[in-house]
Image 1 (cartoon, helix red, strand yellow):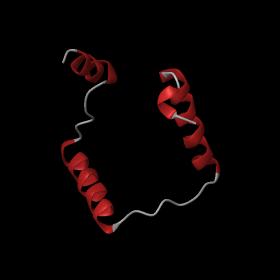
Image 2 (image 1 turned 90 degrees about the vertical axis):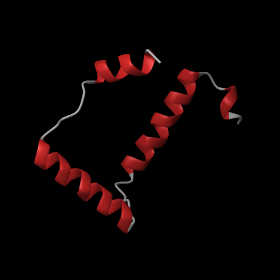
Image 3 (image 1 turned 45 degrees about the vertical axis):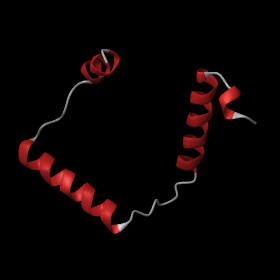
Image 4 (image 1 turned 180 degrees about the horizontal axis):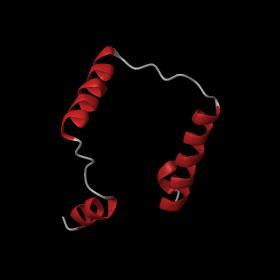
Length: 66
């Protein structure tokens, strides 16, 4: 199957199906030490400043305005 021959909607459905199959296995995803450290760094930064980020509507508007 040529993925690029699929429509955008079909590719999104394929991605969702793949993701659902991963979640269904309930498998543990092993992170590398640098990935764990980065997640810890981000969590600590959030706990300090409590900045929840931007709402999706604002992020989407910024992306689409470029």
